[in-house]
Amino acid sequence: MQLRFESDLTGEEYVNQQAWRNASLPRCPLHPKGGCGFARHGTYERRSPPGTRIARWYCPQGHRTFSLLPDCLAARLPGTLAEVEAVVAAVEQAKSLEAAADRVRTDDISLPGAIRWTRRRIQQVHITLKILLDLIPAHICGCEPTVTAFRHWLNVEWVLPQLREMASMHLAGLPPPLGFAPRPLDNVGHQGQIQHDKGPDPPPEIR
Ligand SMILES: [Zn+2]
Image (spheres, rainbow, N blue to C red):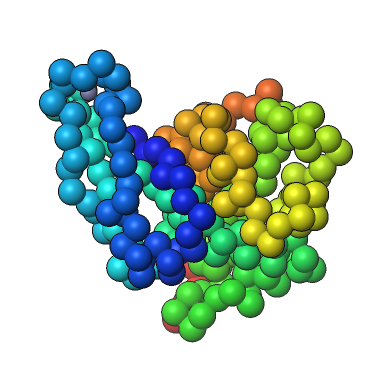
């Protein structure tokens, strides 16, 4: 289970300072009164940013591990929330998702692969923003569910790390990469309003 590690560090700062050493989880989330054998359980590695480690705990009675994800990092996607946000903002400002995907791809990634990669990020983030608008309407009245609109409304450069903090009470139920809900697009059941793109992927490129 992922939990929030409150932190205003960037991904680079988190790695350089080895900030996972400061992560603290004093009580077992399942057994706050203790007696379950809850203890620190080392760290695990994330590939991006290089050198990232995540602090982990284990409850032997509940057979559960708990990891503390700092606010700068995306949940269930590689890299930082800022990196995900940059992709989503680029798509919002591009003529089409395909045009934006073509720009982010490298020689190693085919255009269909880049489109899938980009679409996954934009769908997950836009679904989350729509849910947030329902959860905290008093705060974000009239805001469109785009990172561009949220940035403008909150007057911040990077809105996803900010929303990790603002929505901290709801993270267990929000989809990744912002929240810690177990599955990204399935079971999001949002009053039937969310239309998932179930269209076929483009045919693979012949190399
Ligand atoms: Zn426990």
